[in-house]
Length: 123
Image 1 (cartoon, rainbow, N blue to C red):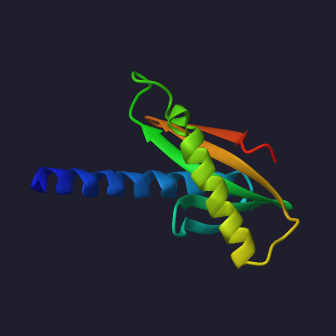
Image 2: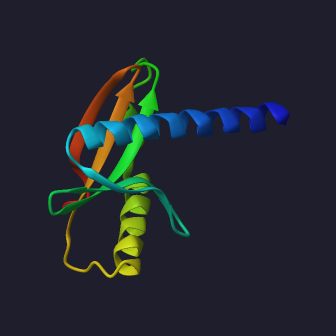
């Protein structure tokens, strides 16, 4: 049991580290990061950023290698749905109706970063 707790703690620590890496990368690209780890009842959004006049809801995925597939493949339909629901909650909470939005993924494999704009959602 303690191995599981330690493993979960390690995963969270790794996740936080790569979210910080992704945040720096997005800032480098000219986006303004508004929030990290936005949580509502059913989901979490890793990063919420502004790209000119578009609100970006960004999922960060890391893998040490692509041996078992690309990190972005882990953002399946179920995960996408939860992120979209959380984004709608964020928009309502902040009274941001009618704002342009998109759903992006920052994929990190080892030390390589790929920014996948408009990855899902149809906005």
